[in-house]
Image 1 (cartoon, rainbow, N blue to C red):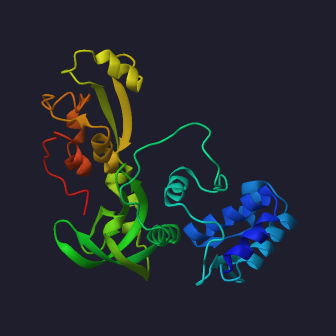
Image 2: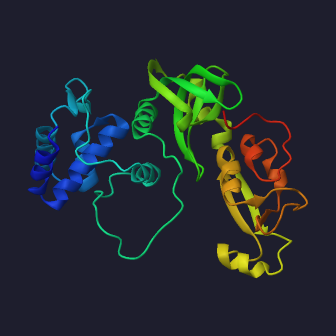
Image 3: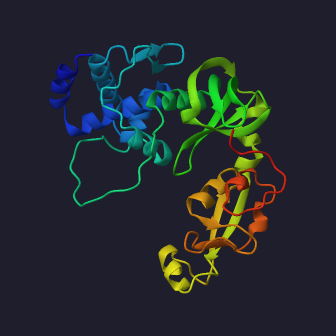
Length: 304
């Protein structure tokens, strides 16, 4: 792909059309397929306009789309190369919050803004392959480096992506151990589609930890001299902040928020300014092993 020519061609298009072409880029890359109706419903445009956009996109990147006449949709091409540069952080945010909501442009910040970024964002190609497998309900054959058992070849059925604030994981059914678990994406050194469809018992609907909702009762740490400051930080009204979370991610959340989950609030209040008032709610929750101060009782490892 001639990048300079591509930029010149894109500069001749209207902003709204570039937005629609960017949507095609992301939709195809992360789901592996696109229907003309996707453009029509997303942007409220007529059939003729959607057809023109697809013709324009295919002219700019001939190898990106392959038309499947029997299914009446476009599939990702073997020579796919996005016409707009993918920013990993933005791509992850769009996956988390809904992608196709705008074109990534190099526009300067209007006010000073900064934050703590991921130390090592996962490879965008790996994310794309996993996302397409989730969308198409296919298994993946991966080479994975486990903290407990080292490197091995596994077949997993990816079901969802999970962001714990520090690392991204894929929630998946692990055929090696016949259970659901989380895999750190950066520990996947290679992966390929296994051409094996998801079995009924491997579906996300069968993942008890994912579908179980628990209510966390968070209060200012009893060791604080001025708990009102923490109440103001988190908008705590009536002395307790009630948060509903999936059992599968509750431990990640409690760790990210530095919540003291010990039954007697024994952790340092300077580092853990919130306390989980009902730690018993974590009994039987696999991800509780990641909750600060929680004394684990039974369950299986949430993180592979």
